[in-house]
Length: 195
Image (cartoon, rainbow, N blue to C red; front, side):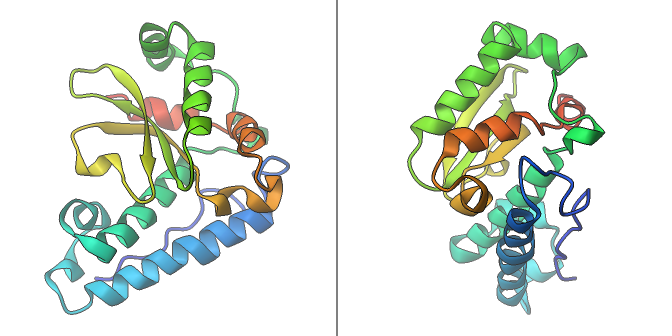
């Protein structure tokens, strides 16, 4: 069974004014769709053709692994965002807020470290909030198509650092894009993965 491009969990313009409908169209409709289409073409007629996307990410190598990882990571990213009008942004609550406080001093400390790590990186990639096997929270930046799915960490939150995620809206100003990201974070989604 072919991997399908998942529908966005909101309307293409629902993230405005922080992320434009044009950026969403390019990111979802062009880049993510391209990864899904190339993955399906590569997997057709192989043992990977019947696997779920996460399994392909974990088992494939080379270009197939890269397209699978980008397709999965981008779908995950859309779940990490929630329109501001629907409650995106703000502050986490409950167990997630407590875990962030233990790991980073407080939510502001987490945001500062997450943003600093994202700004330190050069080029395309991802920034993640992860739950380690022992329950501790950690931040990791991964280059290009590298995803935590291939290890033992559980991703809770991701921000795409590929240029197509922000260039139309913010040009090369990654810091402004990250400011916008914090206005849209879906804390409920992250909390649901805390375990």
